[in-house]
Length: 382
Image (cartoon, rainbow, N blue to C red):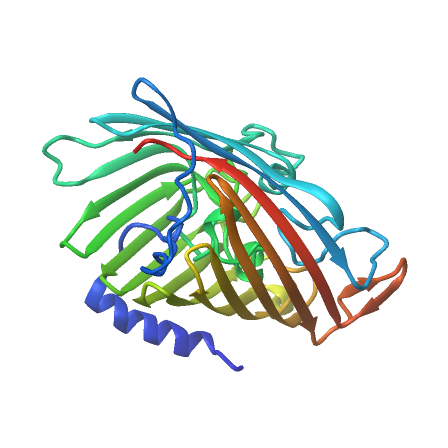
């Protein structure tokens, strides 16, 4: 697969003329409705106190890596990267819808929290999101959020239960940020199109490392059987200087032709311009990738999912090694009872370089894993 930045930018620019920018794609994708002839699982338990809704989950898993790496980790995985038994995440959410003032807090523990927050910045440790919302009564749907919130980029989200596969894809872990701190706005432009602007400190931080501001432009066009999201982020991301910008173009097309079948295509292109003092041969590393996934609802309780990704990291800026990566994942999902979800999957990752650890000291070009995750969750009233 050969995707040039020029071709990608030309195509996206022509789309942008028609649609402009709007509100983000990090909203979890709704699952297809159950088959009409099969009873759906019972709803998850509801916890509310006054005007505050409580929700959350506990997500644990077992994973086996056929390479048996000495580090006991699944490379290119996020959150469920450990081999053996592990806690991916435990989460508690408190939410009050804006009326006109609202607030939202997500607290997170487990491997997910370790990935979200680096050891050098513990300002927001255990916090996935924490923001205040303002929705003026006469604002015609306009909303302003201030604080920490997940990125609008990407099709997959942090919470495994809201994705189609159990493991997170390469694009989620290496092409886009996890979260931002700052301001974001959303505004319905038409019945099907929402637009937004974000002013944030940067990628995955509360306190910026250079004093610069990253700008995000977001777009979401929602039709009965298709949703198209387009996001663009740009701003200084090099530590200690505002010279050199990091830019990201992210777009996803989700198709839901029937209650039993849905699919999406997600494309990302990112580039990090380094300061002028950086050697020319490493001045502008870039990365790009595409993900394709399809989901079939075989019964009201069970679903099958396939996902394929191709990722190119030209200088190793994202993955630590200049390489071309591919990944395929097959997932089986079953909703056992109210608030209980089981996912089992097989995943194969391969590279054109000897990137994956095998044993204690050897490296090979591929990695195969099998995983099984069990998620218990409860949901809000609204």
